[in-house]
Length: 265
Image 1 (spheres, rainbow, N blue to C red):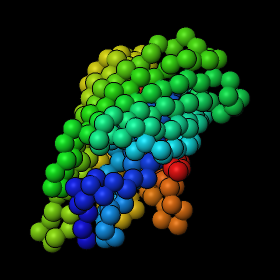
Image 2 (image 1 turned 135 degrees about the vertical axis):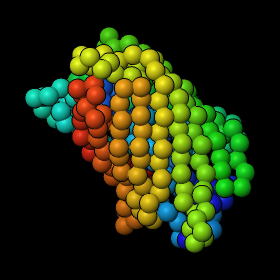
Image 3 (image 1 turned 60 degrees about the vertical axis):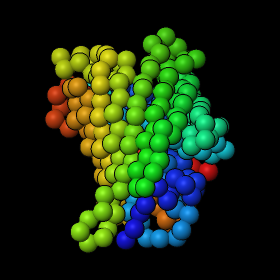
């Protein structure tokens, strides 16, 4: 099997999908766009290494859109609360390889009642370098903009991230795609006193392509450890599914199970 990150980027063929919602209820669009990629040459490849639970700076190209549905249980990670979901949709303009791309997303927070609360988010991404089997992106995101309903007075969130894509070739000749994403956000860390207060802090995430359709991810903030899996559906181009758990060790008393589905176009 072969999956050259360099060939993928230079081929310039991307299919955008959306990442899962954060544990504190922020909409899926605020975490950035995680592209599923197809190389210019048709070769067998492992799945794009999506990162679950923290931001990624890798972005889709201009002229692509997405819609994403996420469900977490319990809502807000509060034991005894019912599960609930978020719905996000957005569109990207610009080119992250030749310039800067911007993704604007509408995040509807809560499905019942639908549409009574939500926010707007915007993400900027830029390719720093690409060569051989690796590439590096940087990104800046702002969330909780122009909120309405219960989210009207939410504080604006800011996140800066750098993501490195690389293919590691095994002794058997299989190239395993990996993504490492590191960054800092003003509300990326939940307090570990059980109150669920969000504050500033650093984060890191690692994603690895496992099979042709499945990738696995491990991420951490200063107080949480998250584990997730993403699955592309070849029979339905553009469709992606995700399963994950925020705060695996329940260090912040805000452990959540997350399910997600996204569609790119």
